[in-house]
Image (cartoon, rainbow, N blue to C red; front, side):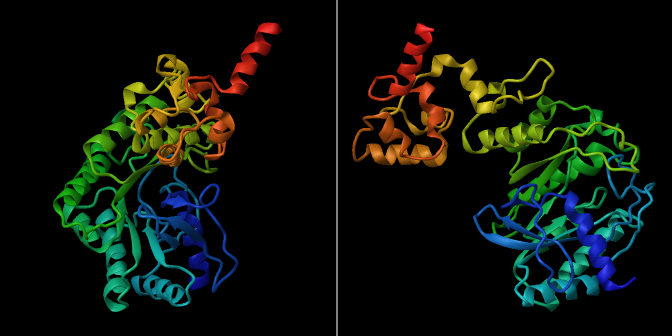
Length: 385
């Protein structure tokens, strides 16, 4: 098979993995044709660096039976693979032309996981040693590889990841009969955490991540978030990503209802509350069915259920109190505190000038002990009609 055909198949096939904080909706951006029609992914790294990733599979052949996966062993699809030199050479051509500045490399399992992972590692070794590339490389860890192989990937990559897909073994049985959740997914992830904690800081400097396929096996948001909370509190994981299940024709789950994108969005909002706002799992509000409430964002739902916390006096509240107010995020909270060092905030108008989205905060605050004017007006109108 010609290189152009391989690139088209294997770069397009890589779109199912989330690789980082991308700047555009649904993560994917098609760049105008460069050498060939590959996909380039503009991504932001944890330290704020921006990279343009060449995102690709080593092979889309696979021995596994994952029921949701477009490349499972039983689906009829055109299969192909790169050689190590082929992929390394092409990637470096893109780097030299300034088209990309990083690599995201994953693969289906061709033959066995150890053999395929070694091919991926050897490809990265060519890039690192032969071509002296020192930039960003994200390596996907394949389920079932040895600890020694994980250690090799750990030494070479900027970031590694292994996708848990579901919260635990109960839900995994519904998507694969070949793989075992604890042995092939959770245990390797915990071993990566052990390596990260013990290694010098310059190893795996961009950390490690995982991903869940939301709604693939009947799991509820509370099931997912219990696992996520455990990961954030017990391990050094950098990020968790969420991908709403979407049925693919020709797979065992082709007739299953897709997961609403809004459900994925709510999980990301909670993830942010965990990482940036100091919220804990027990503070979240779920529906009777165990899912997050779709109609309102989780912070507003919490505020509605915890009216005792409000109103928050905008001229006295500390940072932790401010970021609990709907509409006030870390940036706005810092601006409020900085402004208070100069002068008091004396009016609703002054408050709204601080940042975008603060209109949403008005029902939850006081300004110098007074309810904001617009909220008082609403109260008066509601009593008249």
